[in-house]
Length: 282
Ligand code: AMP
Ligand code: MN
Ligand code: MN
Ligand code: MN
Image 1 (cartoon, rainbow, N blue to C red):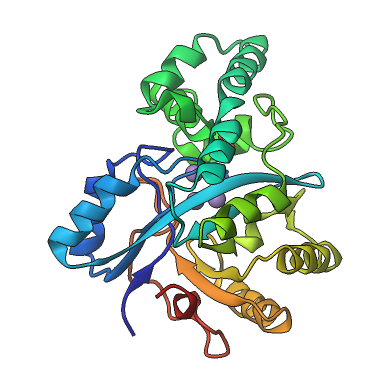
Image 2 (image 1 turned 180 degrees about the vertical axis):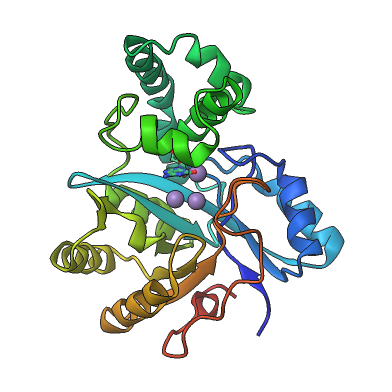
């Protein structure tokens, strides 16, 4: 089987490497088919594709769209999208447009608990200021000595319900899937095991409702193997994919050399019952 990695980030969103650096690293780590899937922005795709071509790798245009479904923030990965499709670009622009005001509110909330000056600090970590997000805040708070690493910043300040958390309305599920499929892409529900309710992943009933709606709106795949899933979750979500007639995807969700669950490439194989998403990509 070829080494596929269909989910990763550059500094166009909240990764730490440039698109070319991400592709070079993937190449050195043996990846043969790579998708760059920056949050809510496709500006890294041209640079990534031309770098991938230099190495003879197969490159897949990707994006990861932030969605609000019921009370949950979900991430929908689009693979094989056409970034020039106007409704996709307009949609992504509308999703990005709320980030500045949200960042200001996050900084205000943190100031209330005595942590000041966070917005300019976070912006220094955001190569693309339109995409300012929680990871940039986290990196600044580590730099300023408030926590030892990014993970602890989320646990203490930025996760749902913590002092710096600001609820936000992202895209509708229906719209996000429509932008992806309308541009010729495949919509993938990213890291389904990470949609937490308190300390636990989303319950079975809610997951059933979500997958029913996702599939009826034209969603075609579930991310079964991803950096933040356990082997038990590979098995669990491969059964969901089978039950709902969905294809299965795999990707590291790499954000940078020092802070990811997994580095690029060398992911475990999809469970045997899975129908791989690449069947729909070529
Ligand atoms: P945002 O879109 O600004 O809400 O930021 C979401 C991003 O924050 C995710 O894509 C991850 O990169 C990062 N993130 C979310 N939760 C955690 C966590 N518990 N630990 C580390 N990074 C996280
Ligand atoms: Mn991210
Ligand atoms: Mn995500
Ligand atoms: Mn991601």
